[in-house]
Structure formats: structure tokens, C-alpha cells
Image (tube, rainbow, N blue to C red; front, side):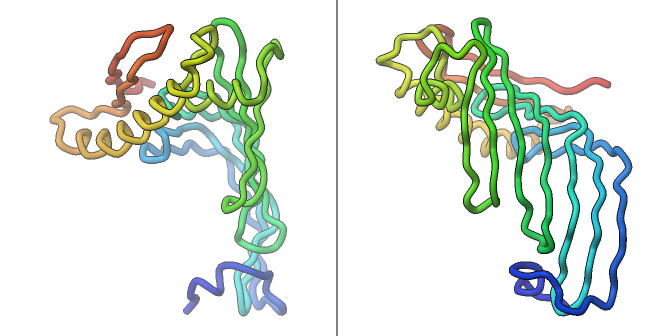
Length: 197
């Protein structure tokens, strides 16, 4: 029997079981996690003793985050383990706007994750890029970008919460359901869709 303290904190002192696990490329889908899907692979060593520990990594072969703050991102990178079950995140998300490619880099432990932004071409400040990530729009009114980002983030959270409930009650399978309040460049819209293939 293992409780929560067994699964966190420190590697096992004297493991009684050590197993090497190889994850062949496999498809994953997490509709409740920003409609994330893709393919992962990895190599892990699992050690079981007074605690449970992991060494190795799980890598994103290809990934799509389908609805993060109203936008679709490609995902690369993965998570690594250094002896405990707490992962170290190193994931890069990219979204292509008409005028630039926005990159968000997430690193660190889940509880203290750091988020860094860059763009190609590098024509915007870090704060402006953060605003685009949270729902603002490049090329919009700079004085309205903070408001747009806040509105977009709020709408994304609301769409995610309500979308899960609505999907369960629909007679057909819908995999993406969300609304965008619009901004100084685009109008308000709602999106409904499903994946084929």
C-alpha cells in the first residue's frame, strides 16, 4: 500500500524492484486538457522501495494543443525525471499568426513552472508576447491588448468549463467547442468541430 507521501519527495533508498520501461510511440488524447492530442514515446527506469522513483524521460513526438486561450499550438519537448515522480517540464508551444510565430517555452517543476516568450521576427516586447499568448492579437490597438488578453483568457476558461458539460449532452460527438469574444482585429465567434483521421 502506497500513500501520497510515497509518490513524492525523494527516491527510494533501497529499492526492492527496479524495472526498465520503454514506451513505444503511442497516441494520446486529453480533451479536458486544452483538447491536447499527439504522440509520445519514452524510456524510464522505475524503482520501488519505501518510495517510488523514476529516472528517464517521456518525449513528445508530435503534439497539438487544440484550444489554449482560444488558439491552436503545436507542442514539442517533454518531461524528464531525476529519481522522484515529480517531472521536470521542458515543453515548447508555437502558434503562427499572419505576421509572426509566437513561441512559449515552459520549464521547471509543475508547481513552479517558468514561462518564457519569443517571436520570429523579434519585433515585440516580452510583455506584448505574453498578451498575445493570453488572447491578445498582434497588430491590434496596443492600448487595448491588455484588456483583450484578459477577456480572451477568461473566455477560454469559461469555454473549457462549459464546453465539457455541453459535449456530454449533445447527441453527436463534438471534440472542440469554444467561443472567442473577439478583439480589435477580429470579431466574436464560436467554433464547433471534430477530428477526422
